[in-house]
Length: 68
Image 1: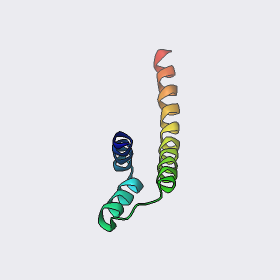
Image 2: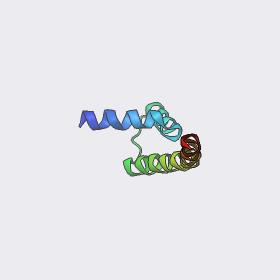
Image 3: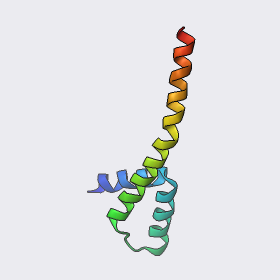
Protein backbone atom coordinates (compact mmCIF):
# COMPACT_ATOMS: atom_id res chain seq x y z
CA UNK A 1 0.00 0.00 0.00
CA UNK A 2 2.81 2.40 0.81
CA UNK A 3 4.39 2.07 -2.61
CA UNK A 4 1.13 2.94 -4.38
CA UNK A 5 0.76 5.99 -2.16
CA UNK A 6 4.34 7.02 -2.95
CA UNK A 7 3.70 6.58 -6.69
CA UNK A 8 0.55 8.67 -6.45
CA UNK A 9 2.41 11.43 -4.64
CA UNK A 10 5.17 11.33 -7.27
CA UNK A 11 2.61 11.73 -10.07
CA UNK A 12 0.85 14.51 -8.18
CA UNK A 13 4.06 16.45 -7.74
CA UNK A 14 4.71 16.25 -11.50
CA UNK A 15 1.39 17.95 -12.33
CA UNK A 16 0.52 21.51 -11.43
CA UNK A 17 -3.03 20.62 -10.39
CA UNK A 18 -1.70 17.63 -8.49
CA UNK A 19 0.81 19.79 -6.64
CA UNK A 20 -1.96 22.09 -5.47
CA UNK A 21 -4.09 19.15 -4.34
CA UNK A 22 -1.16 17.58 -2.52
CA UNK A 23 -0.40 20.86 -0.78
CA UNK A 24 -4.06 21.15 0.21
CA UNK A 25 -4.01 17.60 1.60
CA UNK A 26 -0.91 18.34 3.67
CA UNK A 27 -2.17 21.69 5.01
CA UNK A 28 -5.77 20.70 5.73
CA UNK A 29 -4.85 17.12 6.68
CA UNK A 30 -8.08 15.80 5.21
CA UNK A 31 -8.13 13.06 2.61
CA UNK A 32 -9.21 14.09 -0.87
CA UNK A 33 -11.26 11.69 -2.95
CA UNK A 34 -8.77 9.50 -4.85
CA UNK A 35 -11.07 9.35 -7.92
CA UNK A 36 -10.99 13.13 -8.19
CA UNK A 37 -7.20 13.12 -8.00
CA UNK A 38 -6.93 10.48 -10.74
CA UNK A 39 -9.41 12.38 -12.93
CA UNK A 40 -7.47 15.62 -12.58
CA UNK A 41 -4.19 13.87 -13.37
CA UNK A 42 -5.71 12.30 -16.49
CA UNK A 43 -7.13 15.65 -17.64
CA UNK A 44 -3.75 17.28 -17.09
CA UNK A 45 -1.97 14.50 -19.03
CA UNK A 46 -4.49 14.83 -21.87
CA UNK A 47 -3.82 18.56 -22.13
CA UNK A 48 -0.08 17.88 -22.08
CA UNK A 49 -0.30 15.32 -24.92
CA UNK A 50 -2.46 17.68 -26.97
CA UNK A 51 0.28 20.30 -26.74
CA UNK A 52 2.99 17.80 -27.73
CA UNK A 53 1.21 16.24 -30.72
CA UNK A 54 1.59 19.29 -33.05
CA UNK A 55 5.27 19.53 -32.10
CA UNK A 56 5.76 15.83 -32.90
CA UNK A 57 4.17 16.30 -36.32
CA UNK A 58 6.33 19.34 -37.05
CA UNK A 59 9.52 17.50 -36.07
CA UNK A 60 8.51 14.48 -38.15
CA UNK A 61 7.95 16.69 -41.21
CA UNK A 62 11.32 18.37 -40.65
CA UNK A 63 13.00 14.97 -40.46
CA UNK A 64 11.37 13.91 -43.74
CA UNK A 65 12.61 17.11 -45.40
CA UNK A 66 16.14 16.54 -44.08
CA UNK A 67 16.21 13.00 -45.47
CA UNK A 68 15.39 14.23 -49.01
